[in-house]
Amino acid sequence: MSSILIKNIGAIVTGDLKNPLRNANSIFIDGGIIREIGNNVSRKADRVINADGITAMPGLIDSHSHPSIGEYTPAQNSLSWITNYMHGGVTALISAGELHLPGLPLPPDARTALSVAIVTKRCYDNLRPSGVKVHAGTLLLVPGLVEKDFDEIAALGIRLVKFIFYDYSLLPNGEAESYVKWARARGIKVKIHSGGVSRSGVSQLAGWEIVRKIDPDIIGHITGGPIPMPEEEMIRIAYETDYFVEICSSGNYRLALSLIRAVKARGIYHRVLIGTDTPGGTGVIPRGILREIAFMSSVGEVAPETVICMATGNVGRAHGLDIGILEEGRPADLVLLHKITGSVATDALDSFAKGDLPGISTVIIDGEIRVAGRSQQTPPPERVASETGY
Image (cartoon, rainbow, N blue to C red; front, side, top):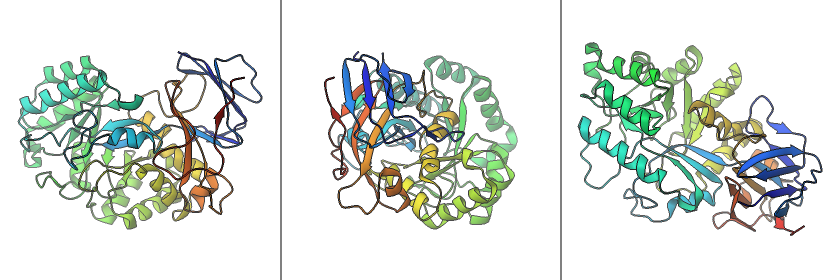
C-alpha cells in the first residue's frame, strides 16, 4: 500500500466537534492510516498530492442506508449506486436493515430476519464496492428471537439492531425490553424507525411514547423517513433525552429546520446524525449528504464545519466505529473538495454556508485513492488536487 503526502491544503475539517477545524496544511498517510497532520510536513512518500489550497474533510458516513445485493438496489432497479455515492463523498454506509431483498416477506419471521442479517454481513465483509465500507447485517427485531441469536450476530461483528416491524402491542410481555438488554450487553447499538409508516406499509408507528418504552440509542430519521412523528414529540425527544437523533434526506424539511433550531438553542450538536434513508422510495441520491450539509449550513445557519461533523465523526461515535475523524491513528478516509466553477463562494465551506454544493476532486478510502481529478457526481471544482510525483 502506497504512502501518500497531501500538501498545500487550504482548510482541514476534522469531523470532531471539540475541534472541528485544524490549523494545518498537510496530511501524511501510510498503511491506510493517517500518521501525521501538520504544517509543511516533509516526509518522503510514494505519492504526493498538491491540494492547491482546497479543503480536506473526513469521508462522509451515510448513517441510514438500505443496501441489498452488492451494488444493486431492487428498490429502484439500479446498479452501481454505491460507487455513485462514493463520488458524492461517501466512504462508509451504515445499514438500517436490508429490507429490499426481492421476495422478502414483510414483516419477516425471526429465523428469516436473522438469516438475512448474517448473509448480508458476510457478503459485504467480502465485498467493498469501490472501497466503500458497508456496515451491513443490521438485525431487524421481530418477535421470536432468543438470546443466543444476539451471541451469533455479535460474534460476526454486527453492531446494530433495529425496531421497525416489531408489534408494539407485545411490549408488556418484556420481549422487546430483553432485546435491548441483550444488545447492550454485547456492545450492539439499538435503533428505532420513528414516525409514520414507511414505503413497506407494514412498519410500526413510533413517537414519544414508543421511543421511551423501547429506550433505543438512535432515533432513525426523526424528521421523517418519509413521515415524521408530531413536531412537539420530536422536540421533546431532543430536549428530554440523550438519544442520537437522525436527519435524513428522505424526510420532512420543515421539521429538519425545526429540529436544528432546537439543537442550536440547547447546543446539542453532538447528538445529531445525517443520513439519506436511501435507496428506497426517495430514490438513489449520490449527493444526498452534501445537500443536507448545505441545507443545514445555509437555511439552518449552522457553521458548515459543525454540520460536517454530524455526517462524519458523530456517526462514527454513535455506532462505536473508528471512522469519521481526521486525526493521527485513524483510517485515512477523506475527501478533497472546493467551490464549483461559477459559484460565488470562496471555498468549500463557504459554498455550504451559501447553500451551494461544492465540487469533489479527490476521495481516499483506507489510504487508497478512489477518485482523482474530479468526481463523476459533482460539477468540477474551480481548483483540483493533482498528483505531483515529488
